[in-house]
Length: 145
Length: 145
DNA sequence: GGTTGCGTTCGAGTAACTTTAAGGTGCTAT
DNA sequence: ATAGCACCTTAAAGTTACTCGAACGCAACC
Image: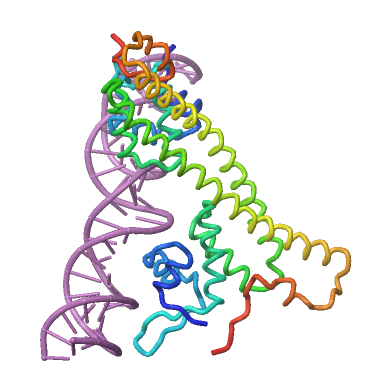
C-alpha cells in the first residue's frame, strides 16, 4: 500500500510541512519518489513516522531522533544505547505527565472559581462584593509603591 | 519579601532569560527596579509568574497569556472570557496528557523490548537469531526496491 | 487550452526562548 | 586602591522545529 504526502499527513495527524521537514532531515530513509518526483510513502515509512511522532511529541529533539534512527539501522550492537535513550525518554515523559497534572490542578481551580462567579451572578445579580476574597489567588489591582 | 532574578529563577525552576523575556513582553507588570536598574521581584510577581509558567507549560502561546493577564487586570466583567479560556486550556491539557500517556505506552514497549534483548544476551550469548520476529515493530534493514 | 488541484523546491518568517557581547556596580582580597 | 569576581543590565544575534510564500511542474477536466 502506498500513500501521498497528504494521506500520510491525515493518517498521522501532522502537517505536510513536518513530514517534508523530517524527510529532508534524513529521518525517513525509505521514502521513494514517483515519475513526477513526488514522495511515495509505504507502510514501512508510516512505521518510522510513528516512532518520530512519538519521540517528538514526548519532547525528544530532532537531532536525538536522528541519532536513534541511526542506531536502529546500525544493528543489534547498539541496543544498549537505545535502551538508555528509551529509559531516559520514559522518565522524561513521566515527569512531563506529572507536571501537566499538577498544572491542570491550577487550571481546574480557575475554571471552578470562574464558574462560581458566573453562577452566583446569574442566580442573584446583587451579591455583595466580597470578590476580594473570592479572587484571593489573583491580583488585578496595582499594588501601591 | 523581595527577590533577585536569580532567586526567582531558582524558585520557579526556569531560566533568568525566560523571566526577562516575560517581563520585556509585559507579562510581569509590577516588577520594580532598584537604584542600579536591577529588577526587584516581590511575592505578587511570583504569583503572576506562577500563572505564566502554568499556562505556558500547558501550551498556551505567549500572546494569549498576555491577553489573559489583561483580562484579569481589566476587572470582573471579563470573567466570562476568562472562563472560556481556562475551559479550553483545561481541555487541551487533558488531551495532551492523554497523548503523552499513549506515547508512553510505545516507549514502555521499547524499553521492555530492549531490556529483553539485553537480558537474553547476558544469560546466553548464543540465542538463535530470531530477532527478526523480536523486532517486528522496528525496521533496520533496507527493503529492496 | 485554460484552470484547478496536487505535488515540488528554496528561501524567508515565526515563536519562544537562549546565548553572546559589551558594559555597569559592588564586594573582597592583595 | 585596584584587580578580580559575581551579579546585574541591554541589544542583537542565534537556535529549534516548524510554517509559510513564491514560483514552478504535471495531470485531469470542461
